[in-house]
Length: 446
Image (cartoon, rainbow, N blue to C red; front, side, top):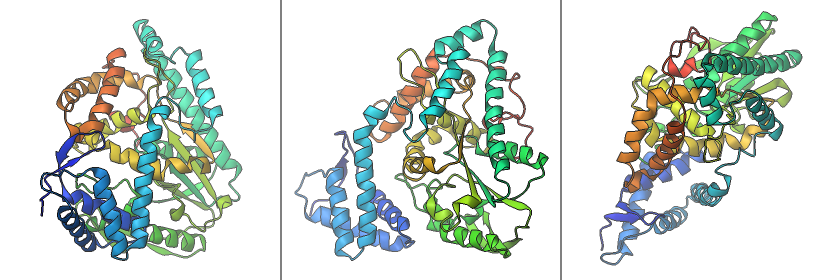
């Protein structure tokens, strides 16, 4: 029996074999269909390794495809058909995503209405910030503070439009969901929307979805063995949905409390009941995920989606990617508020992005309004704060087959930041700006 030491990736790179990744993949598939038995996932993973080694000749290095084929075989033969189906579907998704990545690399998301994209691009052209060269020219002309003011005004107008639409439906609405991918600015925008609506007499009751996380030992893990808080399956969706239905039926429920220090959830802690004149307010990464609000009539919901829809081209001709903006935002926020190494944010971002593509982006069309949280001046701030780190990362990961994604992202961001003029002074940025959520200095209470 040949012991497996290495595996061949799709790129052809040969990397060390790590059986824990098989366990994590099986457990994630099980979680997707409602399972939470990690011990069974480990047992099945061991069977996969044994079968691979039994069928491998001495000196043979299996490919990723061979390993995945064996996982499917073991799942099916052990009677785990639903888990096998989830695993196969996820594998197929990844395959199609790889095939489509190149042609979609420079195009805006097809899920964002083109009218919204066109409006933002038209605004950028009118203000001379649709290219990095244009931004640099305005900064050189001493207009950085003007770019800040113009950008903030555009964002505030978007927030005002959303608030107005909510106000128009005040008689039927029972719930406002503010959602969007990681670091899109949900927390700040939630506060701003609530402030505007309170001025016209609307009252809100906030439900913190983070309290519904499963205990840490029940969380799915990513490829590197870290707990994955990005997937909706990390949340007790069934309990959230049950509580929502009971709240809207006029009942009192006991909200759990999740202790992030211990990774434990304590059930039935805080009583909550919605009064007749109150609207439930939810700020959640997965607010659009169907299982969370299943059975709640759409006319009772207002769904607000956020994304930094920046329309700006570097000299290479392809627009700056929205996901790269959010990556840098999260690096700064996590380093400032969570003592989290920006390098780790980079190396795990592909899992964040993968979850977004599966669990957030497909549901954008279910929203009632989309707010653009991008600020055309923010790249200049990130140049001053992160450029040296990106320069180091592209050196560190250039020839590392386990960090291909990190290198690709770092190289792409480094190329963009190389062109933009750095601005260190953030004093022109309002103290309640959405960017203060990431760079610090906000006067809002998060």
